[in-house]
Image 1 (tube, rainbow, N blue to C red):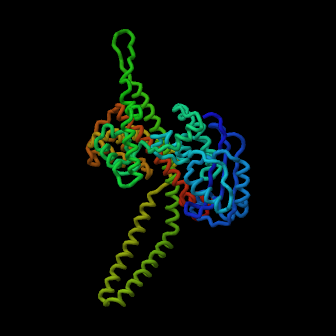
Image 2: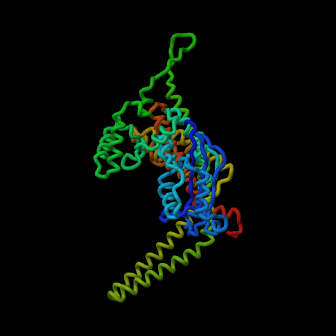
Length: 505
């Protein structure tokens, strides 16, 4: 990008339901792809209630804003002085600008600030497609590309993370595609576009380019183009136009049609060894992705085990109170139901309610026993156990990932079962099962009645590509799960118990 000046902007708010009030706003001057100068950041006191879910996400309460916030109109005048008439870019312009800032400026009688830029989220989705597999949540990308931790879910932290994403990830891709001028980038981000991976329906997760070989998928896309839903029809027609373009538009077609081999002469003779560079590249990508996924899975397992151990302790301390509460709810509910039947029907009909009450009480008791049994199995992994989980999981996922064998239903079904068993053992911290599978996978499957398989490694390009893409999808899923866990009330309670151990004494 040549060196125009523009601004990244982000907000933290009271939620997504109107009316939406801004509680924090931040901006960062950019010159081309790089940040320039200092940042802008303000808290706003708008005397608005902040729902607990929003407060838990960004950490701001009404009390904090009454103490540290500034009047909204003053904040926006300061932002106007900082931004001037330069373009504003957000990592979700439809929300930050269209749903939040512009309605708030109208409500406050504040004249619009800055000029329209492009949507950074839209640009990232296009440039990164199909990796990271249609998921461009900012914190997932930060973790995926190992960008610096800037303070998730704060306006300034998110602005700085977007700046990192532009400088370190998006810039080289954009320049490779010839997007060097501001106008070209803005137009590119604003064009009609849909992800190459199908986002819904029976073919969810498949690459749209598979329709070049799959008649079933092509017919599904043709049906989508004829849909009575206007948006689906536009999407279907757009996909069909893409399929009619040159093969260079499809990344995997280019891989398939690449030179099949490179000749490497062996010394001392005329024999020629053919080495496929694309095969080597995909093998390296798949191996690196496996390593990354194993580390993330191990990290998630450790964090989840800590939360589960805390929940088990909490359940043990509070079970009696919860059960008494639920018994009272059942008694009150069925007494009311019994009286209603007694008034409206005969005594014999009302007597049936007593049997329903006994069944509900027994079911509640059973569920508490089951919960106690399940939580009692949860344990916190030691550092040594964590290291072994990571090592074993890495070994097993390299050998038994099912996705490369979608064209072999029998092998795929068995590997799905084996992978499920591996993941269940990982989640439960069941090292004995992981060790058993690692030592003798065929023996484990035979004992389960699944048969046995030949696990010699298959390194065909199509299989390696599917494997790599599926592991990339799984990496994003684990990143999302880890982010959701870290933002959950249970994790917040776990952190509280770590800071205040006497909570369960």
